[in-house]
Structures are given as structure tokens and as C-alpha cells.
Image 1 (cartoon, rainbow, N blue to C red):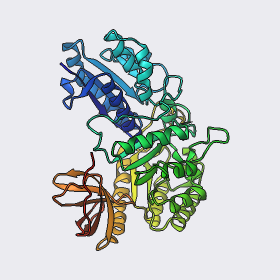
Image 2: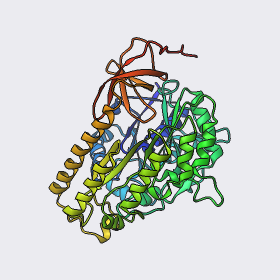
Image 3: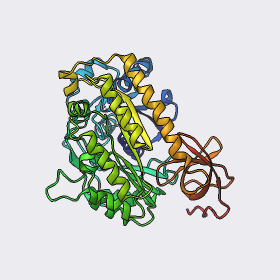
Image 4: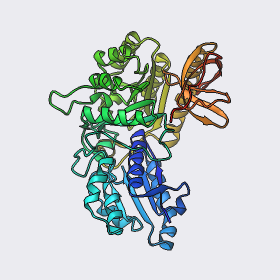
Length: 459
């Protein structure tokens, strides 16, 4: 009987990439994917604690698995990700006795070693399997020189867009952020390994890659005389067969003109920038330790739009940060109304243990007021996005198709607009020319142009 695994993933794109790594390592051990969590022999919970709601989901999922663990003593439960972090797990072991093994973010090694031990296999095999990890406990990169990364079987030849971490951790230290405490200090991957991995992904059918980092435009800054993100983009751009490149998430302080010009010059790099502002009031920004003012951010948006024609811009905003007054929130509202950005990812402030904000600042904005402010920005951004997307009506756009969703093909434009269209042919992984017939705040609908012909699928 084949052994089966199930992975539950919560949180950011980095966690999605980490789960992909774990799946690959487990399949090298002979496990196959099981979609029903209760029927798996190995259950991996890849956790997020950026907000309290995400942490609560992880504990809720573990609580629901406790009866299953009592019934099946041979079941292996692995908790990984930011709930575990890069430091000790003694307290977690005491609180979560149903868990067999804890793994830091981006690190399948502890699970691999446990499974090898249980099966009586040579632990030297773990060293080979670690090549599917990004790093070991000492943060040493262990990818093989050839960069081979076999995608999980279910994604091989089917995954159109893949995430490629290029810098781990963060050393910037925004006062609200728990990432430096859970993912460790900033560490950039070598260029050669990144490019080799992209080549490997393209060989398995991937058409688009998104380069990931907590602050991706700080790539290379931890390496003396190291390459920067602009230089990395140029090297990835040279990979044959790759069609599109994206990167996220950037920080306003490190968004250089060199990087913006590189985006404008390279045909494969998409005209889409994700650069969080977090707040529109200077005192709040200073309390967040963001390192820029609202005027600085306005100027950055002007530079981005001047250098990259037809660019789309996404931002992040936190409402209800400690001490945020109604007047300060209004400045955030006014900034969002003024800049008219394509996307705004909104969050209510949630104090995270160990952060400067949690230790030194009072979470003094009531929850109902946080929600009120959240809803105001949500309504504003819906109006802004609807206005921006309305400009696409009647235009013909290029859509890289990712999947069939409820009978419609779903893909994205270069500016990251979600587009749906119908056609009987197989469009997965193809670029279609679609004329937009309907627009909304969150997606576009269109008709396939007759000139668009899907190429035959090559074995």
C-alpha cells in the first residue's frame, strides 16, 4: 500500500513555495498526495502567524486533528512555518503533544529525518533529500549545483505560474511585523541557484515565475559586492522558454530607478509593482518604523508611473495601528483616493507577541473602529479599482491562462488583471488575446479573438 501525505497551507506566497518543497521531498521518499486530510499517513500544517486570525486557524486545525492522532498512533503530524519560527520549540512541544515533529520555515529537513528514522533507512539519505530544501537549520543553502527541483507530481506539466524565493527572512524590523522573529535575518540566495531553479521549472512546463522576498528589492544587500534585484532580473530574463517574470513584495526605500528602468526595458518582466505604503500619516509611519514619509511615497508612485508605461501598482495598508487617530486615518484614506492604485491589500492591526509595537505600544483602537476604517477603505478601493478596470472595456489584452475555473478559462494580463473567457480548446499555459466585454472591481470578462490559436501540447 502506498504511503500518503497531505499538506495544509496558510499564509503568504512564501508558504506556498515552502509547501511545494515539502511535497517534492515527500514524493522523493515514495509518498503520494492525498486530498482528504483524514486519510493521509503524514499531515503537514504549514502555518502563518502574521495576524492573530491566521494563528488561530493553525491551532484550530491542530485541535481538530487530536482525535485522529489518538485513534491512529502511526499518523505523523508535522507543524512547520512561522508558528514554529527559527528559535526553540520547547514550549510548542508542551502545548501540542499530538505533533510529532516541528520544522522552521522553508525547512522540510526535520520531517524527512523523522520519516527516515521511522522506516529504518540510512540517515545519509536525508542529505540527498535536503537538496529539495532551501536551507538547513544553519541557514546553509543545500540546493544541488544543477538546480534540479522536481515539482510535485500533481503540478508537473500543469503549473503555469510558480513562486521562486530569492531572499529569506527580514532584517528591516518594522514595529508591527513578526517576520524577523519567525523567519530570521535577511539571507539572499546565490544567483546561480535561482537561475538554475527557474530553468528546471520551465522544463516542467512553468511559463511565469514570481521572485519572492519579504523585502524583495533588498535582494543581494546582505552579500558584499553582491548582485542587486535589477541584475538578477536580467539573468532570469535570459532563461529560454520563460515568458513572464514578476517580483514581490518591495519596500519604498529600495525601489531604485535602476530597478524601475529594468522593469521597463525587459520584455519578460511584467508592468506590475507591489510596494506597500501601510499608512498615509507621517507620525504613524514613523511609529511603524517604515523609514519614509507620505510625500516620499507619492513621489515614488510618480517615478514608477513615469518610468514604466501603463504600469499597475498594488499596495498594503494597515488600519488601527496603535495611536492612530481619526485624523490620521483620514490621511490614509485621502492618500488612497488621490493615488488611485490598482490594488490595496487591507488589514486591521493585530498585535504580535515580541514585536516592538506589542511590547511598547497600546493597542488602543477599538475593534469596531478598526472594522469601520477597514470597510471605508474597502469601499473606496472597490470604486477606484472599478474605475481603473473600466478603461479596459473594448481593449484586447494578452492573457496568460492558468487554469479552467467553473467552466471558464482564468488567467492574468501583464498588469496582473484577472481575466475570464470561455472556449472549448485547452488554453492552460497558453497566451490568449482576449477582448474585454465586461469589467468589475476585481476581474474582467472577455471574448477570445479568432486569431488566437492554442499551440499543440508537447510531451
